[in-house]
Length: 141
Image (tube, rainbow, N blue to C red; front, top):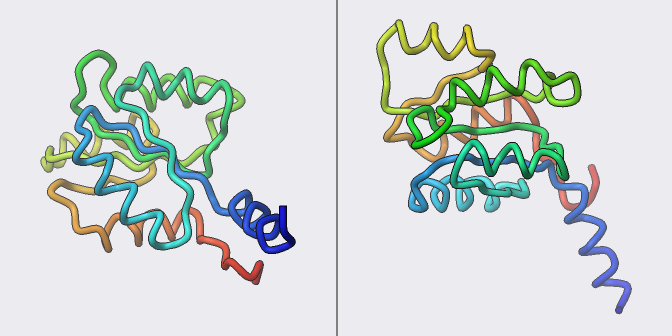
Protein backbone atom coordinates (compact mmCIF):
# COMPACT_ATOMS: atom_id res chain seq x y z
CA UNK A 1 0.00 0.00 0.00
CA UNK A 2 1.35 3.41 -0.92
CA UNK A 3 1.31 6.44 1.37
CA UNK A 4 -1.41 7.91 -0.85
CA UNK A 5 -3.55 4.78 -0.41
CA UNK A 6 -3.10 4.91 3.37
CA UNK A 7 -4.07 8.59 3.44
CA UNK A 8 -7.16 7.93 1.31
CA UNK A 9 -8.31 5.22 3.73
CA UNK A 10 -7.76 7.55 6.70
CA UNK A 11 -9.83 10.26 5.06
CA UNK A 12 -12.63 7.82 4.24
CA UNK A 13 -12.86 6.84 7.90
CA UNK A 14 -13.19 10.52 8.84
CA UNK A 15 -16.26 11.07 6.67
CA UNK A 16 -19.45 11.44 8.70
CA UNK A 17 -21.65 8.38 8.25
CA UNK A 18 -25.31 8.72 7.30
CA UNK A 19 -27.70 5.77 7.38
CA UNK A 20 -30.49 6.05 4.79
CA UNK A 21 -33.57 3.85 5.25
CA UNK A 22 -36.11 3.56 2.44
CA UNK A 23 -37.91 0.70 0.72
CA UNK A 24 -37.41 2.40 -2.65
CA UNK A 25 -34.06 1.60 -4.30
CA UNK A 26 -34.45 4.73 -6.44
CA UNK A 27 -34.84 6.96 -3.36
CA UNK A 28 -31.87 5.30 -1.67
CA UNK A 29 -29.72 5.96 -4.76
CA UNK A 30 -30.80 9.64 -4.88
CA UNK A 31 -29.97 10.09 -1.20
CA UNK A 32 -26.64 8.28 -1.54
CA UNK A 33 -25.62 10.27 -4.61
CA UNK A 34 -26.51 13.63 -3.07
CA UNK A 35 -24.59 12.96 0.12
CA UNK A 36 -21.52 11.11 -1.15
CA UNK A 37 -20.82 13.90 -3.65
CA UNK A 38 -20.73 16.29 -0.70
CA UNK A 39 -18.42 14.61 1.77
CA UNK A 40 -20.55 12.00 3.52
CA UNK A 41 -20.25 8.24 3.73
CA UNK A 42 -23.64 6.58 3.27
CA UNK A 43 -24.92 3.15 4.27
CA UNK A 44 -28.36 2.13 3.05
CA UNK A 45 -31.06 -0.16 4.39
CA UNK A 46 -34.23 -1.16 2.51
CA UNK A 47 -36.28 -1.54 5.70
CA UNK A 48 -36.43 -0.42 9.31
CA UNK A 49 -35.72 -3.97 10.41
CA UNK A 50 -32.52 -4.10 8.35
CA UNK A 51 -31.53 -0.67 9.67
CA UNK A 52 -31.88 -1.91 13.25
CA UNK A 53 -29.64 -4.88 12.43
CA UNK A 54 -27.04 -2.53 10.90
CA UNK A 55 -27.16 -0.31 13.98
CA UNK A 56 -25.78 -3.16 16.09
CA UNK A 57 -22.54 -2.79 14.10
CA UNK A 58 -22.32 0.88 13.06
CA UNK A 59 -23.46 4.11 14.67
CA UNK A 60 -24.09 6.83 12.10
CA UNK A 61 -23.94 10.56 12.71
CA UNK A 62 -27.42 10.98 11.18
CA UNK A 63 -30.28 8.69 10.10
CA UNK A 64 -32.59 9.55 7.20
CA UNK A 65 -35.72 7.43 7.10
CA UNK A 66 -38.76 7.20 4.88
CA UNK A 67 -42.01 7.17 6.87
CA UNK A 68 -44.22 4.83 4.85
CA UNK A 69 -42.49 1.49 4.42
CA UNK A 70 -43.72 -2.08 4.48
CA UNK A 71 -43.13 -3.63 7.86
CA UNK A 72 -42.01 -1.15 10.49
CA UNK A 73 -42.72 2.48 9.59
CA UNK A 74 -40.26 5.32 9.93
CA UNK A 75 -42.25 6.59 12.93
CA UNK A 76 -41.88 3.20 14.64
CA UNK A 77 -38.17 3.15 13.82
CA UNK A 78 -37.78 6.57 15.45
CA UNK A 79 -39.63 5.45 18.55
CA UNK A 80 -37.53 2.32 18.89
CA UNK A 81 -34.27 4.23 18.46
CA UNK A 82 -35.26 6.84 21.03
CA UNK A 83 -35.84 4.05 23.59
CA UNK A 84 -32.31 2.66 23.06
CA UNK A 85 -29.74 4.35 25.32
CA UNK A 86 -26.95 3.69 22.80
CA UNK A 87 -28.82 5.13 19.80
CA UNK A 88 -31.20 7.73 21.26
CA UNK A 89 -28.89 10.70 20.53
CA UNK A 90 -28.61 10.05 16.79
CA UNK A 91 -30.58 12.77 14.98
CA UNK A 92 -33.26 11.41 12.66
CA UNK A 93 -34.56 13.10 9.52
CA UNK A 94 -37.87 11.78 8.24
CA UNK A 95 -38.29 11.85 4.48
CA UNK A 96 -41.84 11.48 3.18
CA UNK A 97 -44.60 12.64 0.90
CA UNK A 98 -46.93 13.17 3.88
CA UNK A 99 -47.20 16.93 4.40
CA UNK A 100 -50.03 17.65 6.82
CA UNK A 101 -49.40 19.33 10.19
CA UNK A 102 -50.61 16.08 11.79
CA UNK A 103 -47.82 14.21 9.98
CA UNK A 104 -45.17 16.71 11.08
CA UNK A 105 -46.38 16.39 14.69
CA UNK A 106 -46.34 12.58 14.47
CA UNK A 107 -42.73 12.73 13.30
CA UNK A 108 -41.75 15.12 16.07
CA UNK A 109 -43.58 13.02 18.69
CA UNK A 110 -41.75 9.92 17.42
CA UNK A 111 -38.39 11.63 17.97
CA UNK A 112 -37.41 12.97 14.55
CA UNK A 113 -35.57 16.29 14.57
CA UNK A 114 -36.30 17.24 10.95
CA UNK A 115 -38.88 16.43 8.31
CA UNK A 116 -38.07 16.69 4.58
CA UNK A 117 -40.90 16.23 2.09
CA UNK A 118 -40.83 14.19 -1.11
CA UNK A 119 -40.18 14.75 -3.84
CA UNK A 120 -37.11 16.27 -2.27
CA UNK A 121 -34.49 18.48 -3.84
CA UNK A 122 -31.03 17.02 -3.18
CA UNK A 123 -29.88 20.43 -1.93
CA UNK A 124 -32.70 20.54 0.64
CA UNK A 125 -31.77 17.15 2.02
CA UNK A 126 -28.08 18.04 1.99
CA UNK A 127 -28.80 21.25 3.92
CA UNK A 128 -30.78 19.30 6.53
CA UNK A 129 -27.91 16.83 6.99
CA UNK A 130 -25.35 19.65 7.13
CA UNK A 131 -27.32 21.32 9.92
CA UNK A 132 -27.07 18.17 12.00
CA UNK A 133 -23.61 17.01 10.97
CA UNK A 134 -21.25 19.17 8.90
CA UNK A 135 -19.06 17.15 6.57
CA UNK A 136 -15.37 17.16 7.35
CA UNK A 137 -12.99 18.32 4.66
CA UNK A 138 -10.72 15.79 2.95
CA UNK A 139 -7.72 17.72 4.18
CA UNK A 140 -8.91 17.31 7.77
CA UNK A 141 -9.65 21.03 8.18
